[in-house]
Image (tube, rainbow, N blue to C red):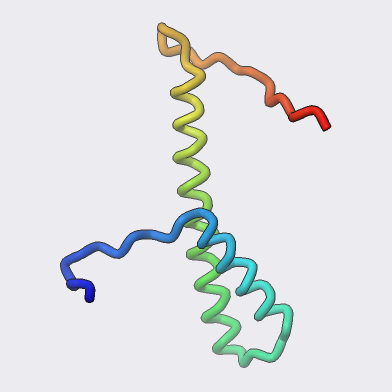
Length: 83
């Protein structure tokens, strides 16, 4: 039982992505009314915004980790794992 004073935890990146996948599947099924499609679209926009927030925070954390002692960012190319 949650109190109305408690903040609801925002969905994780993985939860937001899973919701997006579900929404896309529902929209592609084309068995929704216009109103239902608009509601799914609105939920999808919120999920995309949440994903963007998480990715932006991750990028900022990486920039901090890549900063040198003087605070200058050092750019390093992304190294893909050998396959």
